[in-house]
Image 1 (cartoon, one colour):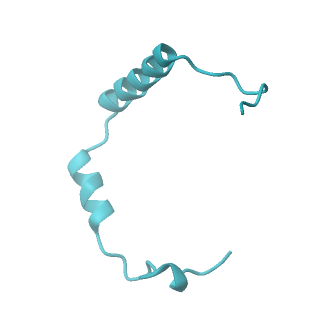
Image 2 (image 1 turned 90 degrees about the vertical axis):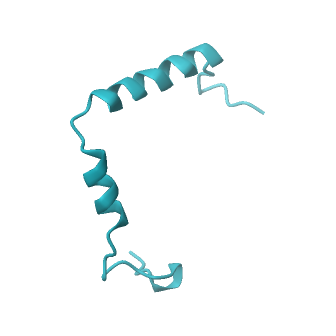
Amino acid sequence: MTDSTHDQLSAQDMLKRVFQIAEIAANSDVDMDESFAAACTKDKNRPKKHEDAVSV
């Protein structure tokens, strides 16, 4: 069942979009090593389990 209000992307259009995003990412000035280290850093304030998360 498709929703007629949303345009369906062809496989070719989808690939074009993926490559555009990849090109933007490749040209960005992000230090991947620094980003990876920041993502892996343990944060003492980060909830350990889903149940520990504070609801908003």
